[in-house]
Picture 1: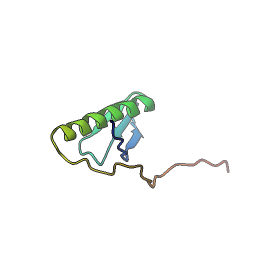
Picture 2 (picture 1 turned 135 degrees about the vertical axis):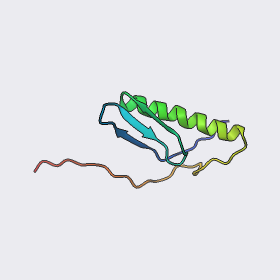
Picture 3 (picture 1 turned 90 degrees about the vertical axis):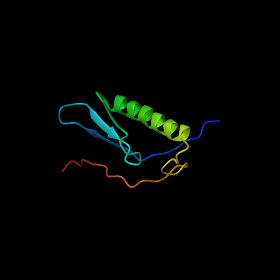
Length: 80
C-alpha cells in the first residue's frame, strides 16, 4: 500500500530561462526544468527518490503524512 506525503515546495523562474524547484523540508532536494511542468515533474521524482532512500535506511520522514495548508504569496495584476 502506498503512503501519500505532502511537502511544501518552491518553484521559481530562472533569469536565464527554465525553472528552479526545491523542497526545503528535504535538504538538498533541488532540481530544474525547461518548463514549469517539467520542473514540477522533476521535483516529484526527486522527492520520491529522497523519501524512498529515507525509508530504505530507516530514517524518519520530515513533515506530515497528511495534507496541510500553506500560506503562499501569489502575485495579482489588476488593471488600473
